[in-house]
Amino acid sequence: MNFDFRNWDIHVGKPHPFNAERPRPDNGTKRPDPSRYHDPAVWQAEWDQVFTKTWLLAGVESDIPEQGDWLRFEIGTESFVIVRQEDGGIKAFYNVCPHRGSQIALADFGSANSFVCPFHSWKFDLEGKNVAITDKETFHPDVLCHGTDLTEVRCEATAGLVFISMSDDVMPLAEYLGEVADHLALYDIGEMVVVQHKKSDWAANWKGGVDAFYEIYHLHSVHPQTQAVMDDRTQIDLFPNGMSRQFVPFAQPSPRFPDQESVNEGIRIMLADAGIDPDTFEGTAQDSRAAIQRAKRERSEKFNLGYEKFSDTQLSDSTIYGLFPNIQIGCHPEAVFIHRFLPHPDDPGQFTYETIILFKPEDIPGYKPPAWMGLAEDADTSGLDRPDIVHTGLGVPPELGEVLDQDSELLPVVQKGARSRGFAGPLWSEQEARLRHFHTELDRYLDGEK
Image (cartoon, rainbow, N blue to C red; front, side):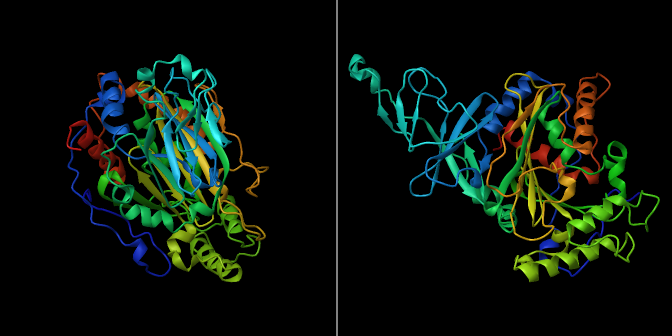
C-alpha cells in the first residue's frame, strides 16, 4: 500500500521550475467532527472568526476600469461596494448608509460621481465622505458628530483581482497569498474581461462545495465522461495560510479509461482549441497533450502572446489554485475560471455557488476560452459588453454544463449524509490533501490560533 505517496509524475515537455513540487506540511491524520457541515454554532463561528478576519475575493479589476465605476459584493449577511478612485486606486465600503442603514448600491455594477441613499437622499463622494444631508439643520449637531461617512474596509488588488477584509488587523494581501500571488500574476488576469457570470443556490454547506472542487478523486464516479479527456493522476502543492495548487492533466485519457490510443471527440475539441485540425492530426491520445503544448507555443510566437513565461504544463493542463477561505481558480493562458463558495446568511445547509469566466480577447482565428469551461456558443467574448449575473434558485437546474450540474445534484446527497449518526467525519486520502490542508487552516482560526 503506497499510502505515503505525494504525487504522480504527470508532466510532459521540458522541465520547468514552475512545475517543481513544494515541500508538503504535516497536516496530521485527524478525523474532523462532521458537525462542521451542519451545526449553526459552527457556521456562526466561521463567520465571526474566519470570514470577518481574512481576505475575501470581492471582484475583478476589469469590472471597474474607470473612475467612478463600482461593483457590489455580497457574502453572508454583509454587502460591500468597491469603487475605482480618481487616482486609479480602489476603495471599499460597507454598503450601508450611516443614517438609517439602507443599502446605497442596489445593483451589481454601476458608474457614478457619487452615491445617493435611496431612503432620504444623503449623498456620499467616491471616497465615502458625506457631502450632503437632506434638511441638515433639523439634526442636533451632537447627533451628526457620531459620524456621517460610509464605513471603509481594507481593500487591496493583485493580479487583476480585488480583495477586501473586514479586519483592520489582517496581514498584507501579498503576505497572505504568498507565492500564489506571483503565480496568478503570470496570467494577466487584469487584461481579461468577464464573459460569463453565474450564481446558483445549492442545498449543501459551503465547505461541501470547497471539498468537492478541491479534489479530482471523485471524477471517475460522478463524472465518468471526463475520463476520456482528463488524467486523474495529479500533482498537489500546499502553501502557507491554507493556499494550494493542483495540476490536472488535460487532453489525455485517465488510466481508468479503457481506450488509451483513440483520439476521442473530447480530445478532438481540445486539439481544435489549440489550433490543431483534428482531422489531420496523426498522433494518438498519448501524443495529443504534447501536441497541444507545441501548437500553443507556435501560436504565441506568431501572435506575440508571451507564452514563454509559462511551463509546457501550463499550456495544456488546468493549473488550479485554492485561495483560503472560499475560492478556487482554474488558470489557463487564454482564460481563467473563478469558483466562489458563498455561505448562506442564515442556513448552514445552503450555499451559493458562483462561477466567473474571464477571457483575454485577441484578434486571432480560433482563439477562445477552453471548451471545457462550458461557455455558451453565443457568448460575447469581445469584452465590449459585460454579461449580467444569472442567478438560479434552490432546486433549479443551474445549467452550468453537464459536469457542474452533476455536482449540484450530488452535493445535497452528501449534505444529508453528513448529518447521519452513522457518519463520524471524513477520511481523507493523499489525493484529497488539499481538503485536509483547507480544514487544518480553518481549525486554526476556529481554535483561536489565528
